[in-house]
Length: 219
Length: 73
Image (cartoon, rainbow over all chains, first blue to last red; front, side):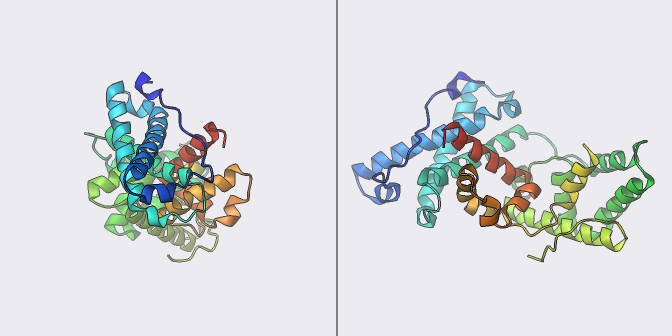
């Protein structure tokens, strides 16, 4: 791990007197001090996230990782300030703020790790399904199940549903990376994935396969 | 990849679940409830199913939980 990521302990307390929202909404030196303090907290969280993902960033030098942490903290600070009105006090302010830094850092790491890599082809996904259904120790029913699954993926899903399902569920492409490549968002692609999964469960159930479904309703 | 894991990834949790946006909105509350030993899954319905179905949101959950845990919260 880069030594640059081993610094800056994260503050741990929200005292009642420390009214983050009021301080961040104040003007002048009080606000500036709060912003500086918040940025330091977010930077600590970003370093924490990047530090636990060093395996994904083995090609990056320590300085590059620190740059990534600084950028994630900057972006998270902007997001926190922009969404300050959304904070409802259902958790501590710092917990609420940390999630923005962790998200920015995680997305940055995933995208950096996939920089220059092609999204795998469908053939790789089909091989995975065939492998799961065709092992010598598998029963005939498993072979039929996975063959049916491939048929339904190819025949029942819309193009976008199929693209997202194959990439995310079968080929291990991070959803944030796929979203960036497709000019979409994590939420929108997950909706595609969710709809594809529901369609597949219904199709398999109609073909007599015992697929558990706990009463999911259409969203 | 094991059979059941692969099926789980392709077919998802098969239960009512939050969207990614709703998950992010509730994540801080859910993590604090979980760390406090409160019934987080009852208090935030649909969160567990979403974390089972969405690898990216599940990673966000683990990161926030581990960060707070490391701080001794």
